[in-house]
Length: 363
Image (tube, rainbow, N blue to C red; front, side, top):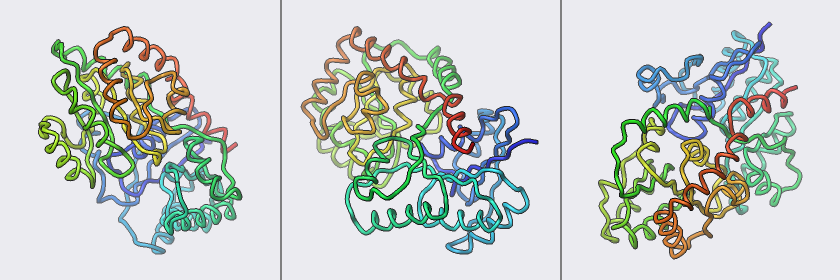
């Protein structure tokens, strides 16, 4: 008999957590059947991309009409009673997660886990509510799975009573991703001007502002591309304009074909904040064999092998970002060094390794 696992998303948006759910739910192994459950069929930003690129061949999606608040519970009961999953992984952590959990419990499903993807820094009202929610999940015997030690520690620093499972990192299908990048690189035109790329949401968690200010000091030596969108786009575009930068060339919006974006670039930058939880984009950059410069925050340090797999820069240090960009642009030896270090670190984030950690979690 096959073991059925439900992977739950509240809308299939463009982002790291959605990519994780897509990757894990499409990686079927012997005696396991995976389904991706979309609780909001009106949000599926990947639908046309799936058909065009023939991505995620094994993916089976069940999409339902979005229900609000407690009305999600009867929806979940109906869905779970019909399909009878053995395991459920929820990829968001909020009040909607609680309704999903209660619906699952009332359906007789007890193997439940929640991916914890974000750090908390202070006891704001929002954070207090989240800590309270985590304690409820503990009481309901839901497995809380942080994707990094940085996330787990941020919670335990504020409330040591929360019980977490072992850290299970985010992942990608390394071989498939590398093949896509290599295929795209065949068609790249040779250009002596290096291109720096950052793939991330334009929101408060990231710090594209510092990167823009550093780039403004060396923009005649290289190009910069920011892939992503978000509520800080207008603000960042104003900063870039004040710095005399070309907004249209730098800000290209959200893109689904990340391998193609990375294939056209030379250096990966990841300027972020202490609120960073993991950053799947870092794994993708490693797989694309790109040298990486990132902000020295716990999550980045953890993913990048304690700083061995990248140049790490303290938060907000424009001067050090400028120096690091200059160094890595001008030295092929430096670029090759960090590429080789990151490749050695990459195996920890391959879906085949991470998938077995999820299987062992439920055992």
